[in-house]
Structure formats: C-alpha cells, structure tokens
Image (cartoon, rainbow, N blue to C red; front, side, top):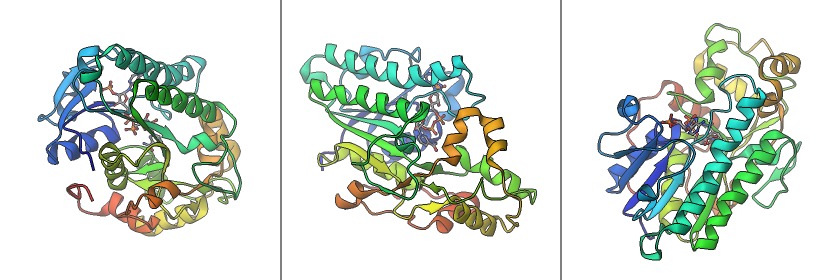
Length: 318
Ligand SMILES: NC(=O)c1ccc[n+]([C@@H]2O[C@H](COP(=O)([O-])OP(=O)(O)OC[C@H]3O[C@@H](n4cnc5c(N)ncnc54)[C@H](OP(=O)(O)O)[C@@H]3O)[C@@H](O)[C@H]2O)c1
C-alpha cells in the first residue's frame, strides 16, 4: 500500500465525488475538490476539503501540482435530457477533452510535483450489447455512442502513463445510492405501483453499491497493483427482470407493468441502450487483487441504498 497524502478530485460535487471526498478526508487524505461553481456548491463539498474552481474544460496546473493522485469523475450527466447533438458533444468533451487537457497539464508539471496515479471514471457502456457473454476486462469494446465515448475516454486517460502515472479506468455499473444517480429514478414508478421490467427483462444489468465503489477508488489510489481497466461492478450481475423483482420486494410494491423497449427509445433516444443493452460484466481484476465487496447481492444492496440507515464510510483501507 502506498496511500496518497493529497488527492485532486474532479466532479467532486457529484454523486460519487461527494462520498469519495468525505471518505478520503476521514482517512486523513488532503482533498482538492474541483467544481465549476465552488461557491454555490459549497454545501455539496465537505468543508474540510479545499474547494477549487475550474472552467470544466482545462484543469489548472496549480490544482495538479503537488497532488499525489487525481480522480477524474467530472462529466455531463448521461441522463440529463434528450441526447441532442449539443448534449452529446458536451458528454464527450466533458470527459474526453478534459482528460486530454489533464494529461497535457500533468506533462507541464515538474517530475517532483507530478501526481503518481490517475483514477478515471469509465462505464460498462464500454461493452455495448454483448448478450449472455461473461465480460471480464479483456472483453472487446462494443459499438454505439456510449461504447465509443468510453473507449476514447479510456484511451485519453491511458496517455497519462507517458508521464509516468499509474492509470486505472473504472468501468462502473449502475451506482446504487439513495441520494442520486439512476436508482431514485428507477424506484419512482414502483412507489406508485407502476414498476416493471424493461423490455424482455433478459438483459444483464451490472450494478455496484456506492460504498463499494468508493472503497474501490480508495483502494486503487493506494495500491500499485491496480492498473488498467477495472470492472467496477458487483460480483453478482443480474438480469433486468431479477433487478426489478428485487427492487419491488425492497419497496414492497408489485412489479407488474413492463416498460416496452419502444417507450424507452422514445423517451431516451439512443441512450435507451444504457437500459436495453445486455452486459454481463464481472469484476475479475478486482477479485484477483483481493478486493472484498460489502454488497455482493443485489437485494441487500438495494435495501441498504433505499431503506437502510445512512452508513458512515466503512473506514480505513482494507
Ligand atoms: N452514477 C452512475 O451510475 C455511473 C455509472 C457509470 C459511470 N459513471 C460515471 O462516473 C462519473 C461520476 O458519476 P456521478 O454519478 O458522480 O456523476 P454526477 O453526479 O453527474 O456528477 C458529475 C460532476 O461532473 C461535473 N459536470 C457536470 N457536467 C459537466 C460538464 N459539462 N463539464 C464539466 N464538468 C461537469 C459536475 O460538477 P460541477 O457542477 O460542480 O462542476 C458534477 O457534479 C461520471 O463521469 C459518470 O459518467 C457514473
């Protein structure tokens, strides 16, 4: 273990960023939290962090200088509206161009002040549609907008290796948390008795509980064995229909009204692939490196995320 002392986090006001910043601070790590609007976002950023402003395009060199590691989570939300051409451009540039800019900035920083590690978000969307095939990190990328976005994003991050950084790209499944992301949106129709599987329900849906994701990022930051693409998903992938049944049981509502594929395509455009594509992703690398999941089973994870007490972070690194 080689725990970092100072970490720069982009997307620090987001779902994952907020929990990560607090976890790092709880573990004695100094955090520089980047936001495009640090003042209004002040409530969203743990006050123990140093909040820094950036323009959402180019990371300032003074934010990078002296940080031992960078966690790059910023990105235009995928489910923040219809995928118009302008939004798709923002989705790509806020991830890929910022990563390229970050790598260039890192290259300008003298060796002694350069971070040693970059942990960059990616997504299981990398795999596109792959039916029932089991997908470990060696699986080939898929096709379509999100698959290409993830592929280019990972390629941009990997270039930090040219400046001597250890690079980890976390291919995240749907992050289960009560305070944001997809889960509150998925749970809403169930609360009105209108929930149901999506399309055939046979598509595999990779997921991860937010506590496990944050532990994974924390572990990746401090552990030199972690390198390259890593499936940030629970070891038990489920089909959409199983996820739906588990959700209905946790909320204690029926799951009787399936959502047809055409309705998702009408509402979400090509982003419907996120819900309809089948990706049976498994966390081979994390398990090989000895990572222990606190939430292996979807129903337990959903119960904690939706109804359980707000847990403090599980604490120190394993
Ligand atoms: N949550 C999931 O289920 C999930 C699954 C797979 C992958 N991921 C990826 O993991 C990363 C973190 O996820 P998250 O759920 O924490 O995301 P999030 O809650 O949407 O937060 C992302 C942060 O990025 C910043 N941001 C938003 N639009 C931006 C833009 N156009 N340019 C620059 N910065 C922008 C925002 O910070 P400021 O407004 O403060 O600048 C925001 O707090 C994202 O890149 C996401 O794609 C998430």
